[in-house]
Length: 336
Image (cartoon, rainbow, N blue to C red; front, side, top):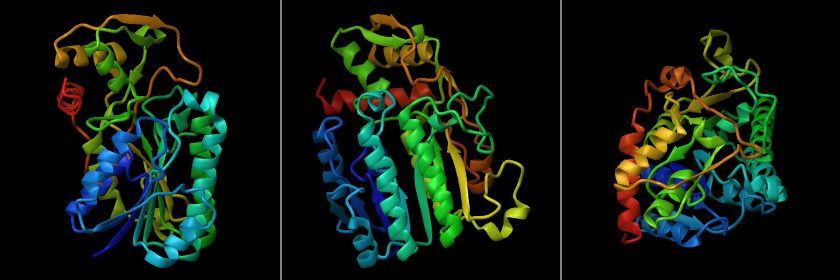
């Protein structure tokens, strides 16, 4: 039975990843600090479902706690590590940047130090589409330069990519960084647009629509994302064959390291996304049109050529279908 360490295991994406691995017969160690960034009850409910499996072990602590991960690696010797723990959110990083520094950068440093001492077969670390920053060339390709991040959140995540690359090079650690594109679905985060919009519409309150709705996002349904992560576990990078990589491959010439986009490769106008929510709920939204918020970008769009080359897979769930699944879950979960 292979062992996976999943950080952020009680989070939105982390809980789905854990369930996927448990269903396939993995032993899963989940690390999560159950932070109060959003309603902790949602995290407890996610973790309670995971605890139904005898092969799941929950540990409650912060990834940035000194030597915590070192001791955990020394004891458990995980075969695979999926690092999802992070302080998320673009807007919150403007008000509380220190939490991003500690969780995202120091937490990733602690993880890499542990892996340096007790190397796993493969490490998969979450980054973000926000790393592309001010890039205007779309769709975003992993081989594009990404030097102008527009939020401190994005800057910390891009920093973890650079730090991880150096560890991969110096200590021969196989590392895949994946850049997520606006993940949504049941059990999602309350600070995300879909959750906030659904709640407001059902409560007959107006929704805040930034940049007057003139924004596009590459919405990625959570089970599509998790399936892609699972397939990437088996796509272990090796710098020995870097000279044979395709033009789409971001594989480093000096390390067993690559960056992979995981998105739907189909940007959707924010107004169309809102209409999908209205249709699923059966009620029109009251829209409060606002200017663009600091740190936001007007559009994201993933080129998923590399993901398909490595795994043969392309996320395909439509926004209409995905939003409908979320609204059904929301009504059941909150008894609306």
